[in-house]
Length: 234
Length: 84
Image (cartoon, chains in turn orange, red):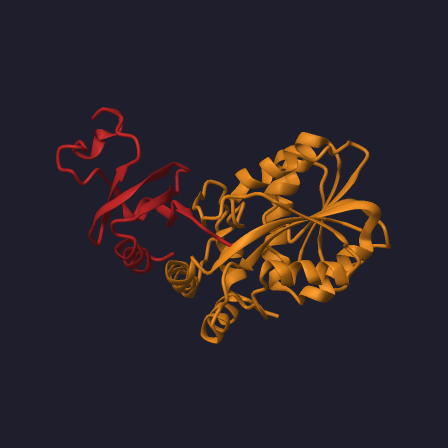
């Protein structure tokens, strides 16, 4: 399945491309007591910034997956360049190639919203150990969205729906992730400095148009759509 | 990116804070103040006092910042952004 918004992130090779950026990632991980013997799965790793940080800072066993071949290639490049032992695989999150209960921590930074949400949560719950945690940063409706706003968001970002907080929690509960905590984050959509970037040599001009449309969308709908950080356990 | 795409892109980003990466690996961050077919001018975030980077005629005086030849540019993108 092609998604031009994700192509934008892949071809520009933008690291930390999720709400809160890499600073939020570091703040969240600081509160996790990650041990060197633990196995961590970074779902939708993008160009691998978080996965590399996990491996370097916590020395844990990191597996990074993405379904976008360019992301996987750029992540692999990064790990090789800085010599961190991260296993990187091109995987479909709806149908993972890992046995049940493989990971102590699964982290998904603005990834699940771009997938079939219930299938993905089921699959992530399957590979999570019984005492493991899933941390996810996801687009969330802040207020009621008109049909027009939903449609616009879905076509621009290639998603199926924008869930509100309660709907996310319901989905998580239905998957067996019954302990759900919402981590406090600033409500505004704060811009992050794009200082981790690995652009492809050829970037289709259409992607600049998508970037414009995305900015336009935020300008008009930024009060309606925000994000939440969920920490979930079985 | 070819020269004409790059020119169009610079025009589109006029007035915005961008990050320009040059073929020699140098990175410049600042607001685009002026664009023509050969050059793009940016006013950098930190004014370094009128020397050092003032090799294109000195920035600060013109108010346009300093110029970068389009031919030297490998890539351009907005300097900060919000992404899902």
